[in-house]
Length: 314
Image (cartoon, rainbow, N blue to C red; front, side, top):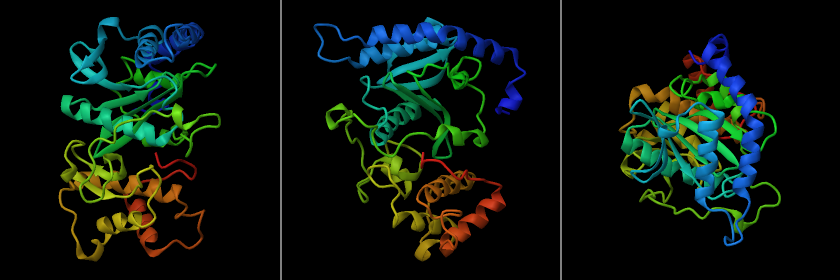
């Protein structure tokens, strides 16, 4: 379950969508008030983002104020309902994530670390301009919602972060439309506008953070990070990607990758295939793929996995 065909008939879905539509204009007005710089402040702080998100989840969505928990075991915001923690949000200073992919990935690494420690399966990052949420599954992330908080049209995708939507799985067939993060910052942003996030834990051998690996069991333990395939800036590593695929399909150079649960293999291959698609290694971008990518295509067919033609590595 989880597709719009499955949820469109639900009364809770229809009521939530109606509420999002009716409350969105008021949210945009309050958001602009929040972002107005106080004369004694040089720039908006992370607290402003937290206030914007509180308005979003309690005003536009259906979370009770008591469900918005701040600074829980180092996590900026934890959403809970009836004593169960459902979503961990890493909040950054307004405008420091949109739309800089490396900063988003670093913020996600922080959120994933908190989520693993608190046994929460859904994470999100926001700077008051954008909001991205993902489910943690099989050593990686699966898209849940990605919206602009300054768009004039009410984003129906927020349903997936509502009290009634957060526990429902979102199917991969819907994910293509979510992958809209540009490769580089949008025009008009400068280096000083980009959040300076601590690199945090790096793999001792590869000198890469957790989001550069196709499988991450524990973000705080680099020994559980397997199959590097992205560069430090989040772009596809042209040398490591085919090696990661070969490690799964052909045991690259006779080396077995230990610590990969068999149940995670389909998700790992899908993750690597998305990167291969984004890097232009799969049809229709290339007519005659290299052997390793032909093997990947056959494996995907056997698993019933389809990778949309146009999407980011996210």
